[in-house]
Amino acid sequence: MTTPPRRTWPKAILFDLDDTLWPIAPVILQAEETLHAWLHSNAPRVAERFTIDALRQARLALLAQQPEFELDLGALRRAGLLSAFEQAGEDAAKVEQAMVHFYAARNAVIPYDDVVPGLLRLKGRSLLGAVTNGNADLQAIGLSHHFKVSVAASRFGRAKPDAAIFLAACEELGVDPADAVYVGDDVLLDVQGAQRAGLRAVWLNRTGSERHLEHGVVPDAICRSFDELIDWLKREHD
Image (spheres, rainbow, N blue to C red):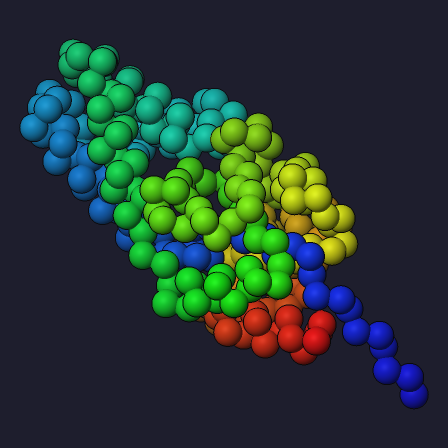
């Protein structure tokens, strides 16, 4: 029986950001509390009229009416604040200041312990990039120097799982999709999206979920950490 030929080490490894490199839900909750505290001091009529949950529900209603906001959740938040300021009779010019405070807190993420060591091990062998539907600022977070490219749906105009956003990242890196691996936490947006664009896709499944079985998605690998990701890469390519 012949042994199948080993693949060459991937020329590029692309990553999702939120919930792949750091947990995002607690950060967003804290950022919304920070924003609401700022509103209490600087736009009290908004804070008195709208609770955090009321602002969230208003955003969801706005998104239902204008689904194009799915491409840019920051723009959705800004539009929701503008509406709240107008309804409360506050100076809408303060909305940009509010967004500055929100973004500062939103980017106060703490990477999982394995992320920075893992990136350092990988970037000596592959070009690293990011593809995200979110609005994380890698420079503000302090990780931008690890990545050759970062493609965000809000700037690109197409969002995962659209193949175009994965292909754009590969093009910027100058690699064929077949020579790239994508790593993300979402079975449909990340794994299925990347595979349909011609990349191999690793499901970074830190929780041990079996969601891929529900959707019939077959990742090229399932890893619970960067250590397992690197072990898989070595088994498949070294």
